[in-house]
Length: 237
Image (cartoon, rainbow, N blue to C red; front, side, top):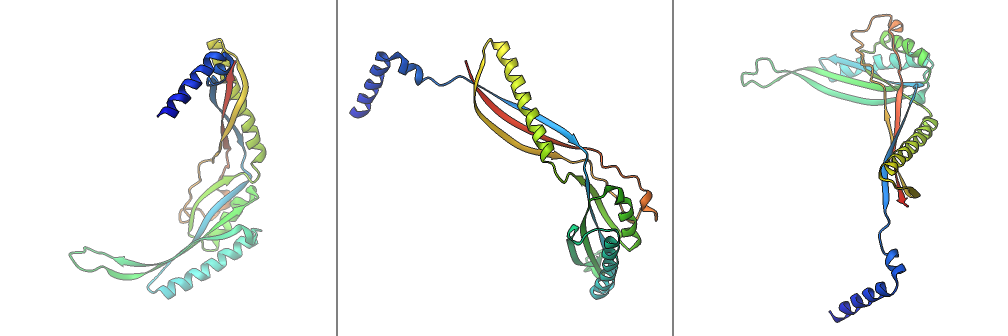
């Protein structure tokens, strides 16, 4: 207790003797603002999830039918110049199918099995997407869950969004400084909130409802929004 009291008296005396030291221990006045920047870019690749759902009385028959259809689907994708590295299995399942009927306290009746096999396909040539869908459906695909679009090399767009975010933060700092008759000084810190990719709305499609000539289906990739937030702190002079 005496040591603490002595330290407090010493600090108070030091401040009284040396006003410059007292100014140094004061917290710096700062202004901290968040800037937002976003750019729009046209996607250059498409990602499609497609596959085959097969139904039969036995799991073996359903699996055999599914394997045959998927083999034809994979062959059609390769015929559409889709490379093996751009085809990845995303889902495979074998599930029993029951008929619950009126129930009435009776156990459900096993009536068959469903086998599902889906692949995710990356299409780098967007002008070929219609042809890819056409070949997929023609070869037996009865599941197309959606099409999404992406940008293969987003770095340039991200850097432009960063510049815009910094400009936005500086603009706000100057506005607040003018309103409060102060002046922003040196930058103390910069922190990036991380890029956010807002993809175009997915195109939902059902293979069962698609026409035989899927190449004529109009598909537009739209634009993708890339946004970045940055927080900048300045000293106030």
